[in-house]
Picture: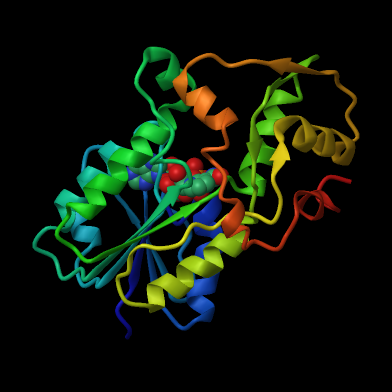
Length: 261
Ligand SMILES: NC(=O)c1ccc[n+]([C@@H]2O[C@H](COP(=O)([O-])OP(=O)(O)OC[C@H]3O[C@@H](n4cnc5c(N)ncnc54)[C@H](OP(=O)(O)O)[C@@H]3O)[C@@H](O)[C@H]2O)c1
């Protein structure tokens, strides 16, 4: 029996790509989430809540490596602090954290910033919690995932007119490619903050929305929406991009091909 890798959020968008890759690499996996799931060979589910801390220490028993993928928009700091508290006194030797590009460059100071960009403040807080945990750690900052943007666009394009944040771009990446990198990090030594991981092209939100609308066969007018605040300004200045780390290979259009029609 091998020591399981504890994967918080293993049932989420990213977790569902990571878990089969960990299995293929020969690891057993213990998934921590609130909802649980159906066990499979080499995969067990533990129900625990990182918001209250309930069940988290028990889930970490007998574990050496934790891959922290659980997230709740704007509450990542709180969840990560609860995780770190629960890991104290356990045998965990490596805590791997997924973060987001721009976390160090997008200022979230005002109520306006918190409204649309509070997610980045939560991720920044989570990074600090990991760094101060006393557990050897690795943090990977990734760009927005294709599949995450597509899920958001599905909701946005139900509106009769689709708002596109003006002047803003993303460098979307396939969730599967980030998952594969995380498996490499699980197999490596704690490395601190590793190099960012972004997709192959920088696209405006308008360009991505147009591609999404074409792929889904929807016709909608797209209108520019200028977001106020310092965080939005940083976004417009490209703080969420890493053009020199365009390491993903799947393009936005490839990710849309065959998915919707
Ligand atoms: N999506 C992106 O484009 C993107 C880009 C860069 C980084 N990231 C980061 O990657 C991570 C995973 O993102 P994702 O898109 O896969 O998220 P997701 O699909 O929303 O999944 C979140 C996971 O966290 C679990 N979770 C939420 N609250 C929890 C709690 N209180 N206690 C225990 N588990 C909890 C959820 O399961 P239950 O609901 O059953 O608890 C689920 O398994 C997040 O840290 C996110 O910030 C995402």
